Image (cartoon, rainbow, N blue to C red; front, side, top):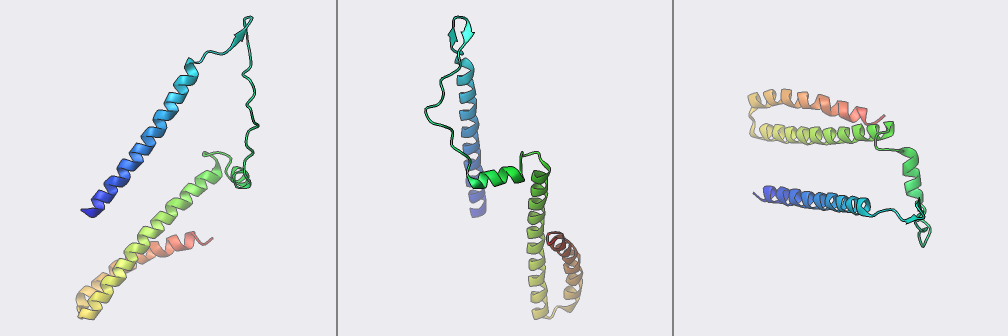
Length: 138
């Protein structure tokens, strides 16, 4: 029950923050669309320059733009694939650890038939664990 409450809290927070951001973005677009451009003698007048110059991007942002120019670039795709691989590796590692605990319990109890059959399950989970570890070490 506590886990569900925590998950529900995270979900409500996520929906609230995302909804507010979308609402503010739409409100700003609507305000910009209603504001007519300034006219002088039938010609459009450029808006006055900002009171201060735009802030220069920091060194980290400059390096990130060099590494990942857009969200749809090749490097962004590789970052997504790598992140997905980390998640899969974590899930498989947790399952392997669980199997190791089960094998230790069966060994301590002396339940040999069950131990031998669970070794097969462990071996089946060890293969993807080794593969995901090897793929992320290149």
